[in-house]
Image (tube, rainbow, N blue to C red; front, side, top):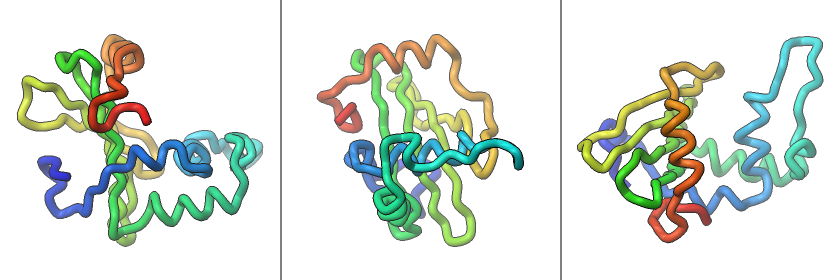
Length: 142
């Protein structure tokens, strides 16, 4: 898998991970955490157990393989989203890219490195993506 700007990363298709126990716990627990007095989220919040979450954590954060999740639009005319787990040793992050069939490169719209930063997506783009992913397209819903 090649994505401009990520030529040195060992990118691998990650869509199959979405249905594995422990995926959503790994993905959502960091953003659900609160301050010192807040209740800390656990895997059970997402219907997972700690063993599944730990096992999938080793897959998601493996520096030898950077999972990429692609969400194309069904009509092929609108933007799609690519989420890349950057698993460099000592420097972990998640990049959110917007793709468009009329452009030769993806645009980074957000990143997560302990905090979320970036411009994000417009509401129109989010609605289009949510309403029209193509299950048959590579990177579509599993």
